[in-house]
Image (cartoon, rainbow, N blue to C red; front, side, top):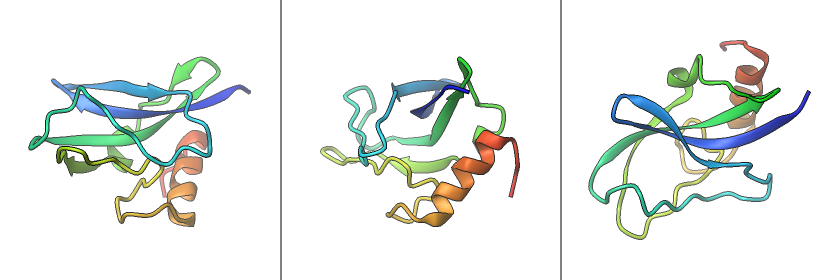
Length: 100
């Protein structure tokens, strides 16, 4: 099974992949396309066997307000500002189709 990871953003009523094929060592995301001062729903998304797994993406999405020059922490699924075992567990559960 081939897997890759991406950063997804909810824009204009649809989830869009903003950055894909994220290496495990990358922990931040910068986008020139997101407008400072606006709020966005964001989530980590997995691609399994060629398909982006977005079916339960809302359950792990967080809302962020973009500030000019701000970087978002990729992998921080629950939005507390750091990547922890909880974040990893939630992503793994999503990939396996579980909802904890």
